Length: 419
Image (cartoon, rainbow, N blue to C red):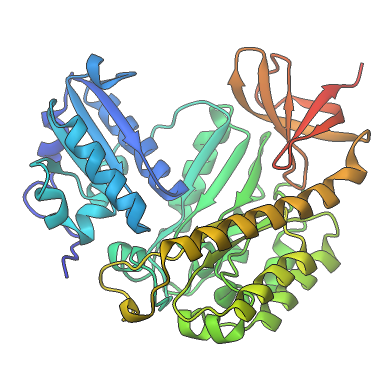
C-alpha cells in the first residue's frame, strides 16, 4: 500500500516556489475538506505572487486536487490528468497518498501532499472574503469502515489545536464571511486524541463577536454517541445552524456490521430523536451506500423504510464501489445494473419525502440570512435550520431578511423578500 502523509522531496516549500509569480488553474474534487485544502493552497500561492487562472488555457500551471472515494471518481481523475498534462501539472488530494502508481501510469506530475499545504498555510494564515469559509478541525478518523479508502489516505485522527481553529474562524468573521463550515473526515471525533471534544470546541467558537453562524460538518454516528448530551447542549446557541449531517449508510443492522460502522439502526434513530426532541425544526442530512456486497432486497427495503421513517432533509446516495486496500468483497459485488436501479429508486423515494416535508412550508414567511452570492442578482440565504432559499435580489452576504417561500425545488426553496 502506498500511504505517506509526511511526504518526500516534492513535499517541501520548493513546490510552492516553483509556482511563484505564475497564473495557476486549480480543479478541486470531492469533499468539503478537499475544498478547504484548495482554499488554503490559494492563500499560500498568493503569498508567492501567484494568481488564479479561470481556465487551463490561461494558466502557466495546473493543479488538480483529487478524490478517489469511488471507482468512477478515480477514473474521472485519471482522465482529467491526461487531459491537463499539456501544462506543468501538480497533483494533490487523496490519490497521491494511496494511488501514486495509478497517477504515474498516466502522467508525471509534481506531487503536493496535503500536509505540505497545511504546514505552508500555517505560515500565511490569510483568508479570502466571501460567503462561506471552510475551517478544517481535524484530519483522519478513528473508524474501521470496510469500504473506505479515505481512512487510508488521511490516516488516524489528528485533531488540530483549538486556538488555531478559533483564529481561523475569527479571520473569516473579520473578512465578512457569514457561514463557517467546520470540516473533517469525522467532525464528532474531534479531540478524542487530545483530551478534548467537539462540544467544547463549539462552545469556545460560539463566543466570538461578529455576524456569523457555524455549520457542523459530517459526523459518524458512532462517535456522536460518545458526546451526544454535551453536543445537544453545545448546539443550543444562535451561533450554530440547526443542521447535522449523519451518514447512516444502511437501514440494515446486518449490513452496518459488515461495513464496520460501529452502531446499530436503533442507535442512529436514538440520535435523530434526541436532536429532534431538543430542536424540532432541525435539518438532518444522511448518506446511504446501495449495492453493498451481500445487500439483499430486504436490506434495501429496510433502507427505504428508514428514509420514510426519519424523513431526512437531504439523502446522498452512493453506489458501492470496491476500492484498493478495503474489504475482500470482490466475489460478492453486484452488477452495475443492480446498483443503478437501487440508486435511482432510493433517490426518487427520498425526493418524495422532501416534497412531503416541504409542501406545508410553501407560502410561509421565514427569517434567513444571506450566505452566498450565486450570480449577479441572485443569492443563497439560509434559515436557522439551514434550509436553503434562493432569492433573486442582489443582497450582501450577512444581510438578514424576511422571505416568503414561493416554490419548492426539493433541495432548496425559491423565495421573495417581504416588502
